[in-house]
Length: 524
Image 1 (tube, rainbow, N blue to C red):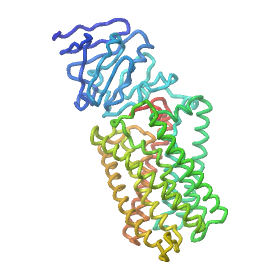
Image 2 (cartoon, helix red, strand yellow):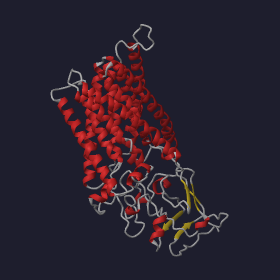
Image 3 (cartoon, rainbow, N blue to C red):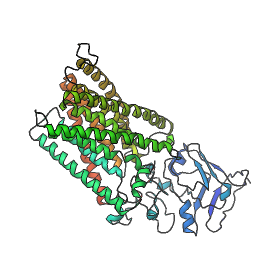
């Protein structure tokens, strides 16, 4: 058995070549793959083995064919026929499937790696999308299959594209709303700046209505996609971005509904108060409900696939503290204290869960390294929790009534609380600073080639980081820190325009809203 075996071919068949085959107890070949081997990472290969899927049965072939393009953990397979553990480094054929149609072609795929990009869910498409799969440079697994990264791929009509209009589109609304808030908070203003911010705020409202209309249209035209979008192991994590968009609208409404140097109207104060409590209830439902659903699933979310999007379900309730920080100062004293207490509670829950997720994120980075290049902008999501918590601490302390005395001892406690808030804010700002540069260096080391909606992660969380910097500058009355905040704001504006330009281009050339190119495929 130590000699090379000739190729075997039967109907839908597997061709396996192995210079050093070993016979298992079932008489089948078993090959060990090392995911840390550069040859494996580059082309899912070993030096002495290769296999090619072919077959005359398209249905059988479609069940077993898959695409792997450079990152362990995403090879699509029929779990009844094969078992794969890329972290453990084993790859075995089940003895009950000696004639299964499994495919790897290591020698022919050296050119298909395209610098480590994972195609994004080969084998995870719905039946309607089964004509599209793969990644740039990958061979077609059967007749009629198209590479979604092939520039000559067929164009689709709006109806088909709307099926892939995912929840992640709300990251555009979040980022635009964050930009309007940032404009309103600028320490160095000029004539017309507020009007520009007002225009951005109105544009954000239009974007929100448009996105929501298109999302509803998607669910109506394609029955079943609503439930599928919420339960999908990747797109489902973007569902909270809908509520984050609402949070930016509430806070921006306070900023631009209040006259410069004046107080908001009584009606606006009431509307914001009611909106805060409704938002808090919905955000709590998302935080508890979505994580409960994830915990109850039989599906395993392994550490190797951990992404910052796992933090998103706790983000809406964490933003409750940010809303409280913005609106509390304009509320009557008795309502202000209640709003601040609720906001502080939600902020504490949000940042605590985020810190637990940080442990998983660092564990993933230490064990399997950085995400593949297309998903590295998502690392900026880790900047958000400490940034928005620092912003909330300072804002809520500022919103306390001046005569606040929580223990009724005759001493005003507002000043002491403000001091504690500044200390905590600086502490958290440093953590956001660390995560920010981790993300910057990761992206610069391997820049994304194809646009994904995850690029917006480089805008919204960093908006919180910039706002926290400006708030700390105001707290310390430091003009130097405020100028740093202004410089960060200019950089963030450039980032927003850069991502927006690529977003528009991707829509026009059908790089997104296309089978295999969106968050409705699993490619982590």
